[in-house]
Image 1 (cartoon, chains in turn brown, blue):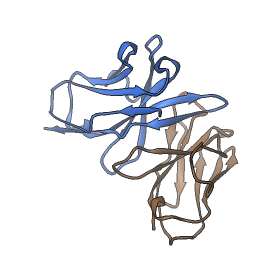
Image 2: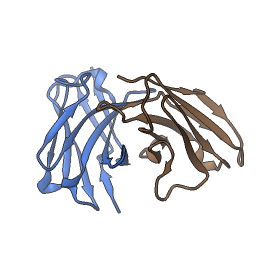
Image 3: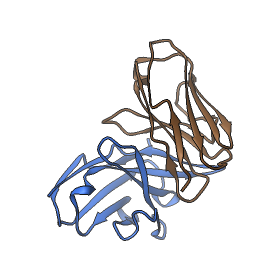
Image 4: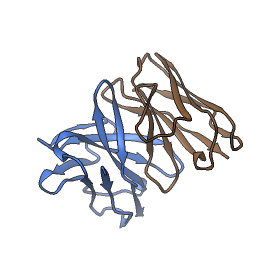
Length: 106
Length: 120
């Protein structure tokens, strides 16, 4: 399994802030890296696929970057609905693995 | 609208069987894999396995092989996750998700999840 490590584990920020979340892969996963937002009680939502591609319908304040083993999800101007847990996921291998999540409180 | 619908909750006792459903709508069900993901209480997301509804090909995370069975019925656009003998440690939320494969692969959309509670 490819271990994925996210940092920080939790983060507190304010409306309008810019925040960056980090995800590191134990091995090179190229750009086979996705980001999801999960509000408890709701379905997880795909935000970014293939490291930097914005999923249709996702606000442009979300952006992703990186390749290989180091990836970043940036939210440019936080909104109340961004209070959630964010997960990265590698799909480089046939056994997808997720990071442990970053809890973002607003 | 592409949707995956899951029942909200199941309450069972240890040793009982269970079959969870995931019903798809809004797209051709036989064109995409369906994945199952577990979230244990207070924990993160774990990939369990996938099924292709066209021919019922399945692949498992080795950690879940022989623990669960993944299947699909294309006649009713529904995928399943089942146990023959539940344990208290199976208490978790179980999500289904459509697996898109293009120049990469990702899970989208997801169902809202089924909370499974297994009492000892």
